[in-house]
Image (cartoon, rainbow, N blue to C red; front, side, top):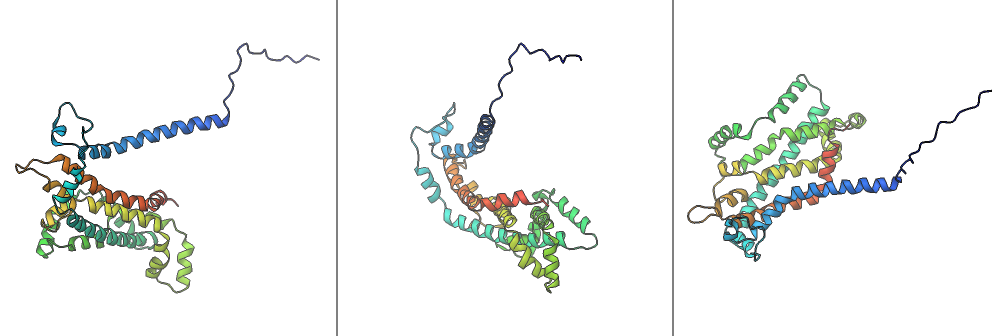
Length: 295
């Protein structure tokens, strides 16, 4: 009987494996460090905007760059608020944004429901045309749109945003279509057996179940309208224009040069409503963006 030979022992000791808990803590530390760095990178421009709004005009023109103000100029925010009809322009922006965001969310949901749950000849081709329309720049359609509204006497009114809202938005239609396509077919079939039509199925079953994508769609549409500069500049008079146009055209010297510290202070106050809306609706926004397209 041949004796079993054991493999020779290595002369180099094996390095001890760190415990699983230590590895998890190290991975978490690396992840949090990366996330904090990305957050700082994203918040950097907004922080610089706040610092700019707290400087004097000579500090903005200083070379090399004057990073922090010697004395914080809190009155810049008050001056930016009182130098123009800030509340009046903000009210115009809010009305337009609410009208557009509400209508475009509902109309896009209705169109998305049709693409997701109804069958008709040419549906795939129409959906392809819809997706292709997202590649059209706004400037291509803005001039003919202005001519149409001018012929209809809708310039300097809120009607253009009503019609734009009723027309829907291709990207939002895509979001709703992907969300509704993932809902169980049994819900629809049970409602049809109970005598419910497709309009009732949409309003009573599908729309109440789609609150995450509704929140995401409303936040996106509100941001689009609130931040739009070209359409209000073209379609509204100075009295009825929005805050975005007023900020870019009102904070100037008699010689026409921009007053950058007041412009920065006004821009900070201009961004605050968007931040508040996102903070209130962030759970629904994140849930809607993460579940859209998942079956």
